[in-house]
Amino acid sequence: MRSVHELLRVTERSLRLYPTTTRTEPAHRHPYLERIVASLEAAGTWGCRYVPSTYKRGNAAQNQLNSSLVIERRA
Image (cartoon, rainbow, N blue to C red; front, side):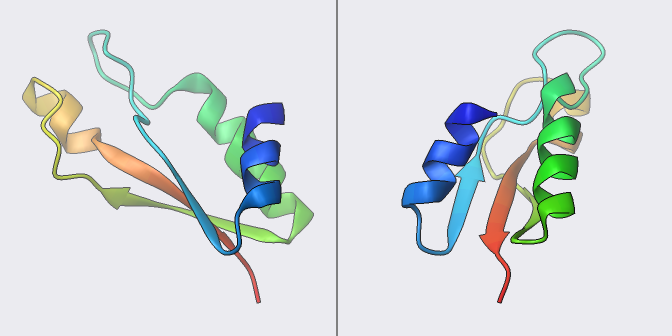
């Protein structure tokens, strides 16, 4: 969380975090992401959304969840 806050401190508008899924079977979102998203959105300054990635991770389950987390400064 400290790393994300530092990256956001030096960015003007947005930050992309990748990868967002685990490499284990079955594939799922990294456990820490939901805490990061909840914390940032609760603060009200940042909005978070997932966008599909064109990078192929491996199997179909991983590719279905494969996305970047985009964190954008709210107006």
